[in-house]
Length: 101
Image (cartoon, rainbow, N blue to C red; front, side):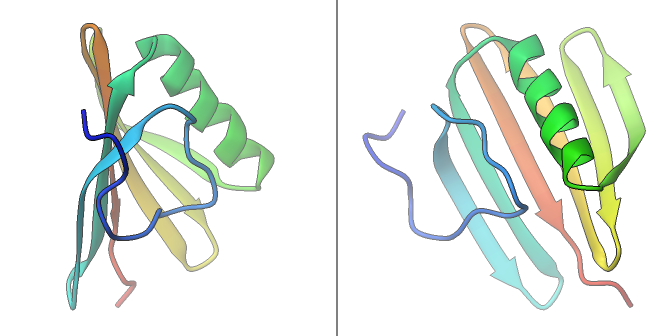
């Protein structure tokens, strides 16, 4: 893992502490960010579900397996898709933000 985050910015109102930003992209089609770090998969999954819910986001499950979930969080005009994946001993989180048409 990198010693520090790559350039870019965080997407969404919350970020799991201890994960490093390993990729960032932004263009006319939207923005995406990837994080990775040593963490418990279920702790990371629960963190994002709890924190987004506390901030008024509604959640829908796009897909789920024992080691990966893709979730969509919506709040007004803000829509974020999160893919959280167990890669023992690491966890990765990919967040995609697409502008509403």
